[in-house]
Length: 216
Image (cartoon, rainbow, N blue to C red; front, top):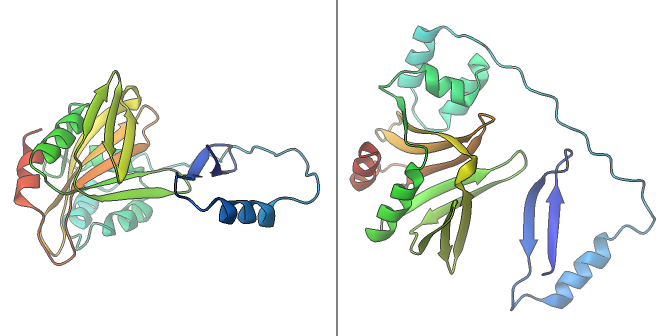
């Protein structure tokens, strides 16, 4: 398979783009020729990222007030920066009104029910250099050993469930009402994926999605 593959400074893949059956091979070859290094370069230096340090404690009352007063889900990122808090710590510290742990394999139920009920959802999965967002329905769900797969013509996802250490239901306030998600974390405490009900700004979240989240 022919592809473009991009890596971060630590040598980890952040994006891969593959040609498909009907792709323009000539355009691909022209791009390769355009960006090919003309001279032999020095060996690639792989540099690990400096570990980030986070607060070990916060003013819980002020933190909870800011959480409750969010107007948009994107306000959460500002909160994390304001308090210098790791995302998973924030979720663990906020209390069960806003976040609580569920079975680490809860994404199975989310995808299976969303498929059965033809419920449109959003899936966010990313790394240090890229984030992919799926918006829409999922149809073909296949469990193959430890791999949870979505195998649709327009969307593929392959999730290694052995990497999931924790799963949390998280609620955030917005001007449009409560927005709820399932958030998956790895053994290193970093985000693997988030799953939301599909919604547009100005509209409340789908009640069927809220009921599904509440059933976990």
